[in-house]
Length: 238
Ligand SMILES: [Zn+2]
Ligand SMILES: [Zn+2]
Image (cartoon, rainbow, N blue to C red; front, side, top):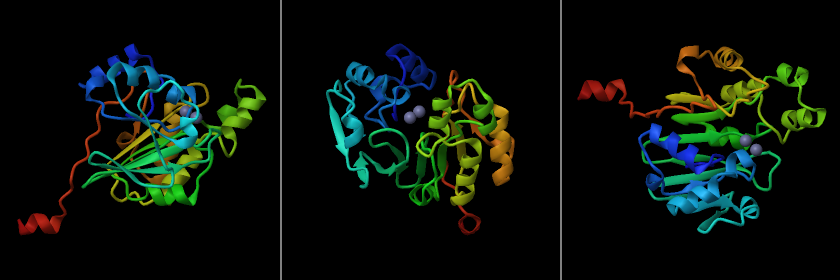
């Protein structure tokens, strides 16, 4: 599990919908200390006796987690059969990291809560089979909306969040040839719409709107399955 901003009850409900329970979770990785990511971690970890992993900076903001493990945010580490590459991001937290996970066959990246695009991010996310990417806000909606000026500055700043255009630019810069699922996430309820996200991303990278997935904050998302693609040559030999 990556992050948890929900109550135990809400988390249980969402996991149940996917056919799993808290007992099936072997580790929780925390990206950073903002409440929508960390708020539910300690109580859920305690309830199901799950170890928690975070960068040293994020860990300084967590005093109520029993089984807490720190990783070096510049170093790859292993969690069971999964290799985890933390990806440091520019965001207004102590030591925020997003993640790239690799198994024998697949590479899956998660990238939310970053105010700018870095070369490091582009390198790390290239070649993913699955990618969950933040499309936080539409710039016009944010600037013309009702957020106080300081909050507008925070969100739109270099240590805030990616807007639809920046996310589209990031997608243009990474190698997406192997991408089987692209999930657009962390979408602002006040400063964005599903249609704006789909329009911007599909136009920028010439993807069919129907192929893109947008996470709804209330409904979440169903399982996405990655499959091993056998190339034509191998098939004809077989
Ligand atoms: Zn967030
Ligand atoms: Zn955040």
